[in-house]
Amino acid sequence: MSIIKDEFIPGQSTRKNINGIAQTIRLDLSLSRNPHVNSGTITGTVKDVDGNLISDAVVLILDGAYAAIANTITGNDGRYSFSLIPSGSTYRAYAQSPGFLLSDAMPFSLGKNQRIEIDFALVTDDTDAYSIIAGEVLNAYGLPIKSASVELYQVVQNTTKLLVLTFSNDIGQFVFRDIGLGSYFLKINATGFFSEYYPVEIKNPKSISHVNAVLKEDLKASKGIILGIISDNDEMPLANADVILYRVGTDKAPVPVAYTRTNHEGIYLFVNVPQGEYLVNSNRSIIVD
Image (cartoon, rainbow, N blue to C red; front, side, top):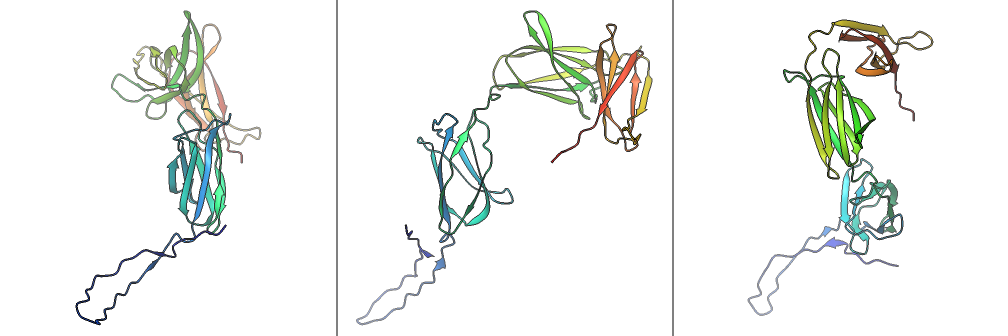
């Protein structure tokens, strides 16, 4: 089907008067070409995986450099429409709505004056109602404690269950994600400090609970040093390998107490280590295409 478009942008001339009989005036007008004369149109629908239409969903168009060039929202009928999209071959379309995951990219090409349809089926975000527990681990002077182990326990009917373990970063920060409603507590350990416990109550979905943990220094703790070299089977040192220090408790169960990484020689070092029995665990991650 043929499409009729304006070749030029509508313009307007200057004003002149005809004051006499048989007078001739000249009204020239220079028109600018319509930059959208060869643009295309994109339409489609946004539904859930069960085929239900989703209104007020956001639809976004990115170019080859991932720059946003257009966005819109769906109507009550779940439909959207873009016009005046320049022709091109490296576009990507995305859709998202509250309670749903961001869609996978929908790559497409758009020819001159072409009209295409792209439909989306959004997947429910099961973690949308989950909460976050975040915080910092500090010493008595307000300075961050890095590599402190932070254990998250859930409390159910007076029993506790260890859910997840993490470590504070270089500025003492930590975060737990995808936390459901309920009662929890944090156990925080760091070499040279007493362990501390912090209760956390998650009462509302999608909430953020902040814990500002302050550890007291154990002045009686010995200031030992643990060091070693991490290498592979060929005895080649492994740089930037993760090293976790475990303290062996009275029940012989290892408890993580510190974290570090090896240097370019594969050497790791833990300082201010209290008296006790220890072991280390190590690995190194790679990115596989």
